[in-house]
Image (spheres, rainbow, N blue to C red):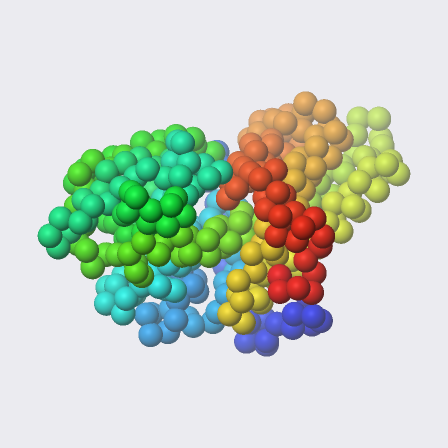
Length: 394
């Protein structure tokens, strides 16, 4: 990431970045292979992030956070992802799982919830998609009905990332059955330990686990409502922007391209190197350029958020480009070594520093997570009538 230019990084952020980079290199990177191999949530890494105030990056100082803003948070995610993408996810969910409260929650809810998240004592998550409401989340059927001073919640959520490790999650529910589908939606903060909640594993990739969650007559206080009743859709759309930006994970893409370059320098049995092939060099050069574009787009989106803008088009375009780039990186890495490039890192015949199979595992998730790329292309085309949106309030 450049320190000067269109998005100049203040010196204090540069200094903080160096601290985070050192932590990532010395504490997180040595654990990355084990995290990948054992498919276990890295509690030790989360503890380190909490002790070093990194979990406080998403929050203002009055709630125990660092108050350093969105750009610094993005820089931290990139540095951690270069060492271990799964560990970076902890910090991504830390912001995404608290965003509606930070933006729209009552003062009481903020004071009750955010300080314990900032220290790492509480762990957030969010629940939006449903089996019949994926690409069209406004068609959700999970309901919350008022009963005295409580909400009574019934329904099911799917693709509920890290819910099994969360203490709380913000839940999207329908509170007005008669309203048009984009209306009548509310957002409620729900403690996972509340009676009537069941979390079941759906897919596990490394320590990243996504779940389905069932709600049966779950009762939570009416004060757990985030913002206004039936106004939840506008809160959700801002969170979706953040989710798409988080899925980019440009730091992980930078690491992946560096691994492709390192693998291309290996000497093969015939004495040649993949990097000696002009076609391979050109492909790697294109990957390297594309990663730099993704990192700049990620920085731009963070800067727009920092200035109070909603960078919907920026993060949507960024998500499409980066998720498809992940697939191309995996393709180039594997094409150099054939099936050997698909072996896991702990296999004795694996390409040193490869790990291309992991890219293949994660690529489909990131193409469809946060909105399928094909759907998002339609969104971009409809918003700009098929024309680029540059310079028009991205």
